[in-house]
Amino acid sequence: MEVALAAVAGRWTTLLLRELMHGPRSFSQLRVALPRLSAKVLSERLARLAQADLVECERQKGFPTHTVYRLTPVGRTLKPLLIELYRTGDALLRETAVRRGPTVGSSRA
Image (cartoon, rainbow, N blue to C red):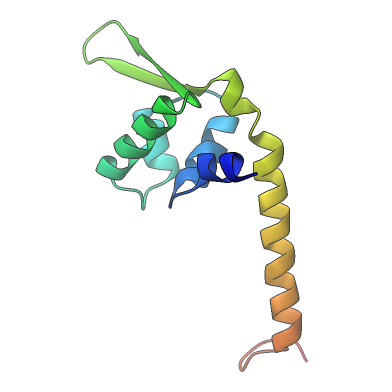
């Protein structure tokens, strides 16, 4: 369990993996999908995921160089974990909202 959680640990990592679950993406496509993520942090996260053998990058010939990132087979095994983390987080948010009750200015009565 700790190995799987360590693989997705770190701010932005789960969102980056989520984007790559939809298929190969270029660096610029990832920047557009995650606009609040700086280019520096994106580069660092991609390098860390590549080092962990979860993401691979393919540099295509031409100018400017075009790099495409995709999940490795090992990276794709994280999909059920990410889906379950999303479901659990969503359930926790809903449960917290129910316990707190309606907020001031809420349209719920």
